[in-house]
Image (tube, rainbow, N blue to C red; front, side):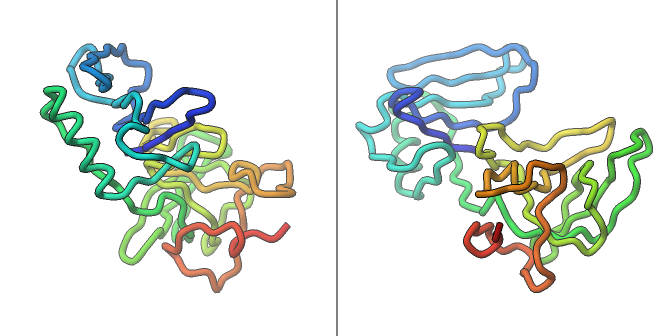
Length: 208
């Protein structure tokens, strides 16, 4: 789940993205200051738009924001007051973390993609399909996990690349909008002493 807010460019609207809708046809149901965006075919909710959210609480950040449990309770109270039965779930797990490629094989249907098994925490490994030329077993890098919003606004959801499932993205310095990032392909390379699962900290993990 992704919370995003940009009052200056979008208005006083908190957007809550539940899942990737892809190219599916969508419809909207609005009650008061709450709009539910759902798949037209199945009725499954893919997003919520909460209008005039500053009447409930202030949000100082812009772009992807992280709410407190108390703020999410307030959102759910508003949903309930407008007659919606679903609830918004607060996901506070870090979405950009140190990862390590522990296994890598060539994609069977590509001459430049690799299927990587990437450790992103204690006893947690995810599969990521990547085309970075510097990808290799043992490399530590920054991983954007499902639920992340990149600096340019694109969202990370589980997907497929040429028939192989992928659950995140290994990031280049340019994709992370890091200062003086080299304008070339290749994921960020961290030192071997970085701890897998540590939340991304530009001050700690990047020196240009």
